[in-house]
Image 1: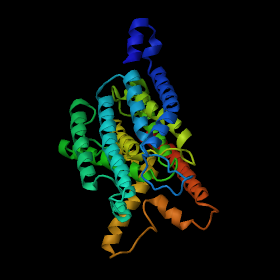
Image 2 (image 1 turned 120 degrees about the vertical axis):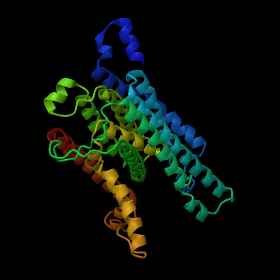
Image 3 (image 1 turned 30 degrees about the vertical axis):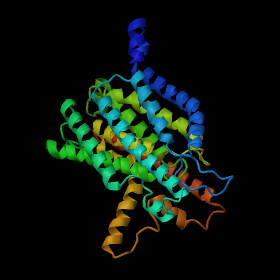
Image 4 (image 1 turned 90 degrees about the horizontal axis):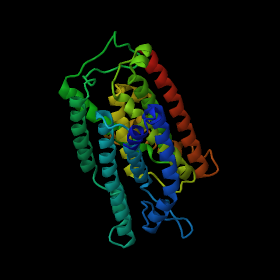
Length: 377
């Protein structure tokens, strides 16, 4: 780790300080994304790396896979400013593995679109293959990676003992315990569900970025205070030695997403794609688990949960009712696109209204989650 090397060479404790390393991680991530993204966009455009069909010669669809650069920047920054412990290793493993699965999905989408352009695949078949690689293969890989990391984390992080912290209920009142096999399965489910939910949310310009950032603010603060014995005792929250190393990592993710908004704000110049949405979604899930706030994801990640929940409810109700629907379309942002389509003069205005209202919900959910966590122990 570069900052540790500088600290040992210079003897200046500033370079070992967690607040300094977190600020530096966020700053470096912002600078790298701002510097590299324009060239990266041009490179993807040269490859015609899009999953949508162009609407005309002058209307080229923005490329996908923008999230892959964000993941690379995050990992690079974390290797410089984070101390590698079980918390950081678990999170980075999920981030890289899930981003890899998402990248395969993105590449499959791009390939299928090219096959349509070459006349080797019909537009209908392309829509049937719009998810890229098969959903069964994706889920298999998600669960495979998450179970392996969950076993590693359970074995090497003593604070993961299988106890669950329930929002709005003090641990002294109810602190349910899951045996090791059940807790590992629970961890795997949370990571996979979070990744899927974040992927569903990536449907409008900037829509997925803000929920990821608010989740990083929450988990970063919880990790910082939980990893400090004095702060944890003062706030009556569990003391988690080493968890505070997730603070610089959360800062790196936050910085990369802030810079990404410069290019993804409406009208978007690039889309995150599955590589970023799935990767960061998986990272959200594991980080909430590691700071023992897994069920607080239901509050802080309200937009992500609502998007994923709308898809699950739509499918279940459609099958159970013989073809009836709860929502006009799923995920949830598509429902509002259809419901409010006559209220706005253009589709971009409609999409911006939906995105900004969901951004506000994410901010409100962050405040509610912080209050619930720090007052509920």
